Image (tube, rainbow, N blue to C red; front, top):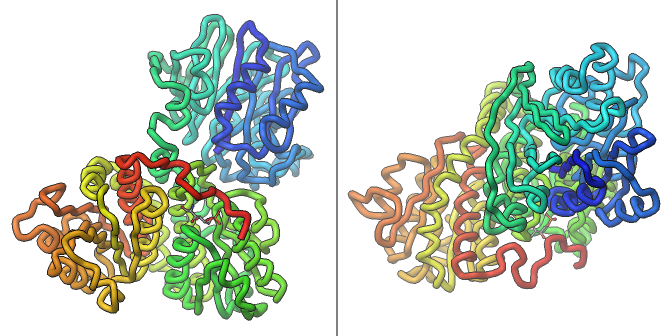
Length: 622
Ligand code: AGP
């Protein structure tokens, strides 16, 4: 997730572009850059790190001109560096890009075989070269060259393009990544989202997937990739800048919860081979021989990432049949653990910087174990010392309480388990086909779960006075119960415990009475009958059950609400449904109601949802 801005008008563009990028820094901040039509042609300035570094460079080398594009980067391909910062230039063309080009490696090889030299490791640079090549061959307009180049790429993109040959013109295009055009008076703007535009205009055109637009001072022309002209009325936006940064949501956390289908699509992009039912896992960095030689998978992580790792452990054992353990980073580092060269240590960390996880990884490396990082931040400390990294590509997560990073970690770990299972001969083709196919449907199913947010809000309303909560689950429902309890603790400051449902009668059942809300994760899987029994035990002690179950489960409704209960919010009972899915992907769906319960409880209590007390987003101290 990166931020793009563009301006064409009568005023100096640099301050407008920098101001727009500042509004978009929440979308990415590892490097930034501008390309501007100046009197000497097309000039580019880029800098690593936050926007202030770019501003310092611009102070030394001012870019004077009235047409330009800018970018703030969240690295996905190629580490954060000046060479990998956008804009990328090829001949007369400068490009900024947000998204992931899936077939970049094949196109790069093809262009290199024709003698094209690359200056960066990014997927974006191929777009600049393709546009340059197409323009040379077709000798048409910049818009035609962009259209021609985009016919060749697969993946997600929003791009803004300048050509040295056509000053006063910006071409933008998009597919599965946002791009909005701002309509000014004698000026046009482009941006990844409207937060960057609102200081200048409130009249906008949202570009749709597969559309291209040419912006000049006086006009905007929108066409499809095939060249058909698109007529679309402008919309007037009333949001404040702060509202716009949060996409209209009240908090970043809520925005990030709703972003999960899109984030997951980015995690899965280019990694699922639906034809063969396999995982495209070059990044995992393992030959089939190495995969076969692993004798133990050792997960290390902290907090929410440890809950994802816990689900990963279940999957690696079930699907790849490799003995697996999970330990939290702060324990491993002082336990003097034994690692062996045939151990695969999987370090799960959103930030890639968590001190305890990093220390555990260093201990594992020192003893010769192979380390795979599952991280969201490219080139962060843990990926830098790992042997390989499987990035989650969720985009920056601003809310301290992790949500979209958790679900994308789950997806990455499930893909890892399938990858290992296939290579070790532990997982049949039929089974891997089934999982790969099911994963591809999860983004749509997540949208279905999210459409029930209002129901969850009604349920949450009833518990804002609760002092304690219990979350129960079995199998991979257990890490989801832990995650539900952690979310409630973190942001609503209510004491909550996650328990393996089978452990309830070994102690926590003593706590259950009419004052104790109990969230039970009970989708139809191998543990279903047993979880139903646990739910009945809670009901028998007048515990107030909130059930998360498979759509149409009348048995759960009967237990939760008594015979004749129709579901929804009625009296003290509640049932939240998730779509029918195979057991392996259920945690990606059942966790969404957990996040929403925590969010709405916290919001209704009026806590600081995005920056809860005493917590930091990245814990780089012990
Ligand atoms: C999640 O909501 C928390 N903020 C916290 O538990 C977090 O998951 C933990 O600190 C680990 O962070 P990491 O994923 O960046 O390593």
